[in-house]
Length: 144
Image: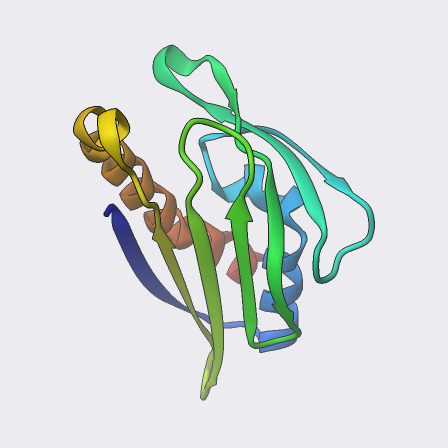
């Protein structure tokens, strides 16, 4: 099962950091794979997003998702509901002396032919996604 995790320390208060990640329409700023995204309804638990990400050869593929956990300033989670791979993601926000520690975990269950053919590219994609937290850190700290 492909899995990836990364943690960054952002020199901004938890409320500001959480608000940035809770609005996934910010994702194209820090996630290079996101080609388009639109929220369906207000930010909060159960909200859904229509998302297209760069697939093989750069062509857009659906990767819509739904928020499964929404605990202001501490926890966000989501599950992808469209596309060939449907990972789940989990953000944790911890206050620290100089700001907020953010951890993003991704995992996907693959079986059958997908497991055989897609484990390596999915793992590479997940590694890239969590590493992009470094870019979000840069953006948020420059907003201060």
